[in-house]
Length: 261
Image 1 (cartoon, rainbow, N blue to C red):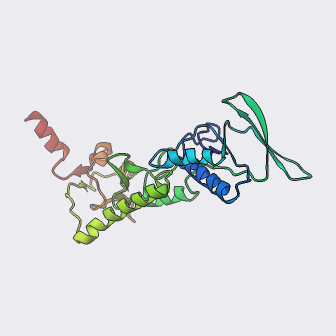
Image 2: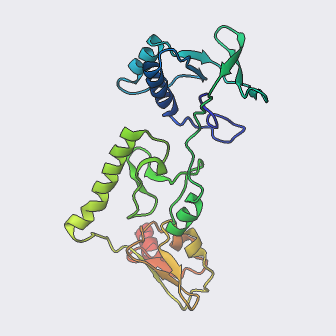
Image 3: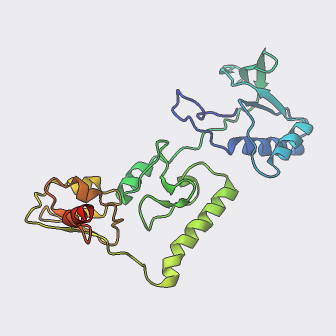
């Protein structure tokens, strides 16, 4: 049974896992090849087999006798005496209600984030997507870099992926992580904020608004800046109610002088 827990507004997982159809077809085809007399049925909403050779795999499964029924089962009933399973489903192509007897029912469940990803993301100060996976810096331009510099994403931690996609993603993460190690140093433009502690009231707004978590609070309750982690976005400067935090070479007075020049 496909799409169990995915593409489902009631469960909350609106996304398609993207790999379940291919895995189900592969396993169904293996069963038919090893045990030709076995009846194998796949209940689906839509068969999704993108990529090279996967559509051919789908057609070859039909050729060896795998039965495909377009419809989401409404109920699975177990006989209390014999233990036999009955899958109740409607074939939406022929509009025919069906009751399928089964020895084994396999659920193609949604790929979801692990339970511990929330605390992990909080400790690493890495953003998460609405689906719960760790969020990439940019879905197209840099899907390997996380929202925090120096932390790279590989495989299904960023979203559902099959094996080949995971291997390619992991290779990209390894290459990006190895680049500064091979070079031996990190280039950093020191466009970082400075804090005037005579003006600072220790409100902590700068720490709260800092996306890369480059601002921390010391033992005296005062904010401090991690110059390496800072992305020079200027959000702390704009949010400071007392103008105690200013970017080097981009202070409010300097920006004002540029405007009136």
